[in-house]
Image (cartoon, rainbow, N blue to C red; front, side, top):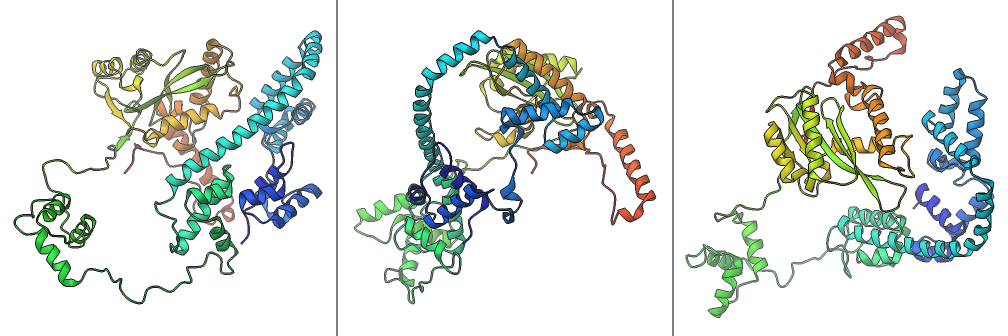
Length: 509
């Protein structure tokens, strides 16, 4: 059985570097043979790893965020010596955006402006701190490994069905493939191979035997039973049990009440679970009683066909220069146009701030009572009395996600991802609330007026909010049709569709 290239890379990274683990120890932890690990380590030390024939997956380049200072400086110098016409080609070739390039320039200028005295003092302190840093790094690496293993082992029982292990248990081909995939995922997440197997209650040697099988993860080779179990109920016993369950004294009772009453009379027919199984087979387990049966409720679907019909909003953390201290980003988005209709950066999370933001957005968009639905999750600022009373006074219909289900508010979550993965986003945190407000003011202007949103046909949110998206898409379609008429041999079918997205649905069925 071949190992995935991603797994090989992770194993090589653990065997090479300052915190390298020996192949013998790694073999005991991961369950991979020592021969394979020594071979991968040798290939990595002799040349690029994985080799060229491993495909594109093994030759992934580092992201610009992972570049060293020398690599960033090289790109800055090349960009400075490049004309404006050739700059775009350089940025695409290096996989860098212009905002990232400007951010690197700014950081390097700040570094050059440092005083010489500060540098000398830093060099003196560096020698004293190196020993302490190494000790802390070793301790941190140990704790990170322990934390990664704990997290991976906590997720493993949640992803696997119950009762997957047990001595002598038979597993189908599908179950074997699922167990191997779950254990591999836990190992990649930082868990030891033996610990992952123990958590899922499968012997480590069993998984190794499955992997070493000549027919892959072949089915269990043991033959099935040739006769029924000796303790199986006889037909007359099944008939007696069903007759008793449906008799006048017991037909209105549940099995947990029937069993003790039979015991008081000195009778034993079967266990409660057997009664439930027989009733289920006979299709006699319908819900009875005035109380409602347990149901899984899905929030009703909501559809927006024009701006200012359906909004969503949420609050997200913003890191600061001080570890453990955060600002809070309040953001309101129109679901139909994806336009940010309102935002605010605050020092605390309070329902009074969210109510004030809603009222400001409501009046800015000139919305009437009963025209707007506002969707959010179940946080305190969303369901607080001040927020709910403000919505009732404005005539805004409230809509909430199911408890602990983030998927019910996907548009707000997607917008926050766009914010925090923006190339110009300050990964080291904001220096002050004023700096955060200035940055988001620029971001909102770019997002609403320049960003071509893929979910609405690559139209800017402001254009769609103002109703200009139909004309823009029609002109694009005309350009493609004219290009097809000029060179029909370049198209084997229809041209790209620039059809307008007429409706957007939240919690679609």
